[in-house]
Structure formats: structure tokens, C-alpha cells
Amino acid sequence: MKVIILLGGYGTRMRPHTWSRPKPILNVADNTILGHILERMKAVTTEEVIFVVGYKGDQIADWVRRNYPHLDSHFVLQEEALGQAHAVSLCRDFMQDGELMLAFGDGIIKADYAAMPGEADATFLVQEVDDPRTFGVVVLDEAGWVQRFIEKPATIEHRHTVVGINWFRSAPRLLAAVDRVMAEGRRTKGEYFMADAYGVLLEEGARIRTRAVDYWLDAGTPANVLASNRRLLALEHTSTDALERSFGEGFTVVPPVYLHPDCEIDASVIGPHASIAAGAVIRGSVVRNSIVDAGATIQECVLDGSLVGENARVEGRPATLFVGDNSQIQMGS
Image (cartoon, rainbow, N blue to C red; front, side, top):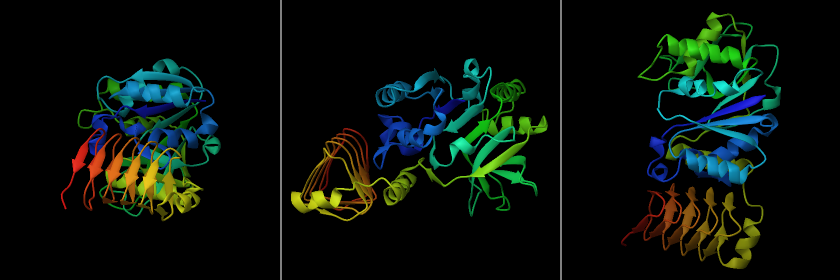
């Protein structure tokens, strides 16, 4: 089975952090967003993995090659932001036969990926939500088969939200549906959407099932990244030695936290829900519900609900900050 992961967005909602780095390699808990995705998809990334990249795609390619050298990786450049279906169409050389897993790089999803193939023509991962009006949903019949897709429904009647990872028995059949959408000019706000291609599959008689996820964490906005960080730390991504380190190194830990072995902390309180990356230096500060990236310095400051970029420097008073890479902020008393 081949896997295509769509990573071509600009990440505008994550600025200023995405001015210098693409969103997929921003940090959450003890890994990047893309790293968390790949770790959860290990069961199905055993053959070719095709990454569709755009904005700062060279950084994504370098990160994958450095951290996942064992993957049979290919990188496809989407030069124009013409939508998801356009991105998939660029992968046609890899879609001439066999099964396909298609993933959107916007969320961290834990599920039984190996169990997705089945008797259907396609299987879509879904999560039931209280208010689906900002998402795409599926409408199911009494037997659980997908009848149609609705993008951003006006009501909350249908709550099975499509989370963005789908299996297809036939890659060529999916490609043909994408080509039909583009040939017919089916666009929304100038872009070609995969929801229209899924509609084509249904029109042509494809049988599509759904499968529930264990969890789905959005990573599209600063608030959602911090929420994902909290959830991941609570679940499985804490430093098991953080309390022991704090006993001997002059700082206090309030679990759950992630502390990289190479960070430096002095006379500070870290946590709960704080992730501190390699080479970060924190002195005389309180850092909770925040992510501090590699090489950043926090001094004489109280941070809560903050994202501090690589090699940034923050000094001063209590604050909630979204500080980009290589920035310097000094706040008065």
C-alpha cells in the first residue's frame, strides 16, 4: 500500500511561527506534528510514502530524510495552491495500481490503520463531534454505508466528521475521480476539493465505510496546538525522569511535562503541560501550558498559554505570547 500525505499549505493561522518553518515541522510535545503523524502510521508506511509539499517544502524534505531515512520517500511539489484534489493529481505517477492511503497533514490521529482495508471500496476515519458545522461530515444509511459528503453543514444533524485519513482499494479509481472533478471545473473558492472527488466515487457506485478513531488532535491554530500538547502530555509523551531531575537540579516540576535531556533549567517552575525542547534555557521563571522550542531562552518571566520559537529570547513579566523564531522580547515590570 502506498501512502500520500498532503503538506502543501501555508499555515497562515500559525504565524508568526510559520514565517520561518512550515507547519508540519512545528513542535508539539516530544515531536513535530509530522513526526507524530508518521509514528502513528507506522503500520502502513512500509512501502512508498509520497509527501506533497509546497511552502518551505525543502525543510520538510530535509526533516523527513534526516529523521526517517528508512522510508521509501518521494516529494512532489505543489507550486500553486489549487486545492487538495489538485495536490493528489500531481501524484499520478504513484497511483497507477494498488491500494492507497491518503492523509491530510493537519491533525494527529491515533487509529488502527492496519485494520482499515476491508470489504468496501474505501474506508474513511471519522470522529463524532458535538458541533460539526466547521468540518466536513458524512451522511450514513442505516447499514453504516456512506451516502454523501457535506462540507461545513448548516445543521448539527450529521456529526460523523471526516478527520482526514482515508483508505482506497484502487488508487487508479481515485485518480480518475480527481481527474473528472478537475476536467469538469468543480471548484470552491478557486480550489479543487477532495470532497467532490469522493462524491464522484459515490455517483459511480463506490461503497464507502467509516471507522472510528481513538483520538483526533487538530494542529491548525496556536490554541489547538496547545490543546494537542496538553492531550499528548497527558496520554503518553511525558518525560519519565522529569521529577527526579528536578529534585537534584534546582527547579520544580508540575507534571505532566516534556523536558528534553539537553535543556537547561534553573530556579524555575515547569508545568503542568509544558514542553521544553533541546538547548532551551529557562532561568527564574514559571512556564506552564506552553511550548518552548529549541535554543530559546526564558528569563525572569511567567509564561502561560505561550508558543516560543527556536532561538527566541523572552525576558520580563507574566505573559501569553506567540513568539516566532529568532525573536527577542524584553518586557518591563
